[in-house]
Length: 225
Ligand SMILES: O=C(O)CCC(=O)C(=O)O
Image 1 (cartoon, rainbow, N blue to C red):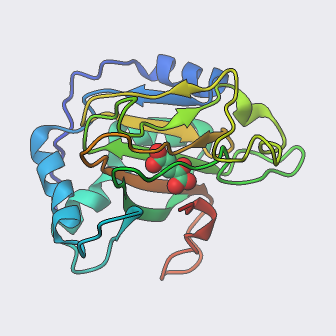
Image 2 (tube, rainbow, N blue to C red):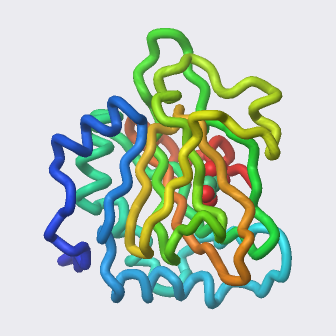
């Protein structure tokens, strides 16, 4: 079947810069990764999800999710493929895919890494957040601590408290259609949505290695409420 790619091809970042940023900082934001048509298709799953008035909305992606192809196609996005080839090396596979929308007043998480690493182990996890709304300081844009993907451990217990702040943390803002791609060992977290609107994102994780279980690996390592 022919794939429909709606990425805007004028990539604002070269593959070299993307790889350098992933090595040095552990993350990269690719702007204009998705065009409006792709965004509209992805948002439909949020619109069809059960209504929720508090907490963080998690949208499960199932066979009958509207515009499922638009979700699955993200794994083939050129920016993601370049990042995954660099950080994970082939083969790798999608190990978690859902929609995430911290509702107004909710969404603050403690700093965490998505995976822990044994000494000398290669990087195993790449996490992506595809912005379906503009990510702003007000609506709970993700925070990251650059360079922490190189640390063997995740944040200390005290730093992992939701209200704790790291002196070097950076808030990743971006326009809808951007994607934040980061090494799964990077310390990061969602933030409280202080706006009155949504902050919808596709959260997709890739894991090093071939997919073992056709029904999909456990999503638990990449899920934090
Ligand atoms: O949505 C975000 O900003 C980050 C979410 C996250 O880090 C998580 O769910 O583990």
